[in-house]
Length: 259
Image 1 (tube, rainbow, N blue to C red):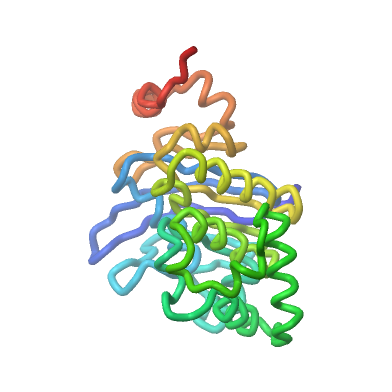
Image 2 (image 1 turned 45 degrees about the vertical axis):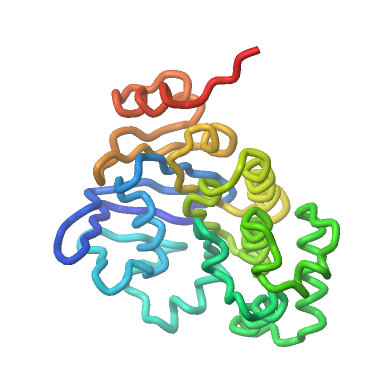
C-alpha cells in the first residue's frame, strides 16, 4: 500500500504557545489510525492542521504534513479548497454544527458537490440517495428533503459521514465522531466508517478519547498526552501490552462487560 499522509516533526502553537510537540506518523491507503488521549492533549489540532482549520490563533510552527507529496500547510487557499472534500473529507464532533439549520440537507449536499464541479442536481440527488441506502438509511429521499432540526443528533452524525463520502475522498478525518452519541448510534457510525473503507478504500484518521472505539476500528494507534506522543504502534499490540503508564491508565478506564 502506498503512503497517503505523513506528519514529520509537527509542532502546533496557539497565540505563540506550543501545544503540540514533535509529532511523527504516517498512514497508508486504506489504513485506520486512531489518535487517543484526554481532552486538551492536542489530538484534534493535528486533524485541523491538515486542512488549515486552526483558526486565527493557530499555526503549524514547525515540521511538515505531506499528503501525496504535497506539504499541506504551504498550500494556498485555492489549492486547499480543491483538496478539501474531494481528496480529504472531515467529520466533526457535532454534525449539527456542520449543517445550516434553515436549509434542507439535500440543498446543502448539492452546494458541496457543486463546489467541486458536479452541478447536475438530479444526478447528485441520486448519488446521495444511493450512498445513504448503502449506509443503511431506509428512506434516503426523506433524509435529503429534511431540515437538519428534523433529524435526531445521531441521524445528523450518520448523514454527516455519508455526506463526507459523496466525493469519494481518499482520506477521512474524524474528530470525536461518536462522543456525543448513545452506544447504539455509536455502533452505527462506526459501521458506516468501516463500510466507507470497505467500499471506497478510504483511509481514516480517527480522533477520540474512547479506547473502545479505537479497539473496534484502528489498525494503528497514536497515544497523546499533554501535546506529546507517549506511545504508538499496531493497535493489537498496544491494546494487549501497552508500554506507557498513561496508555495503561486509559485502558484501565475502559468499561468492561461482564456476564
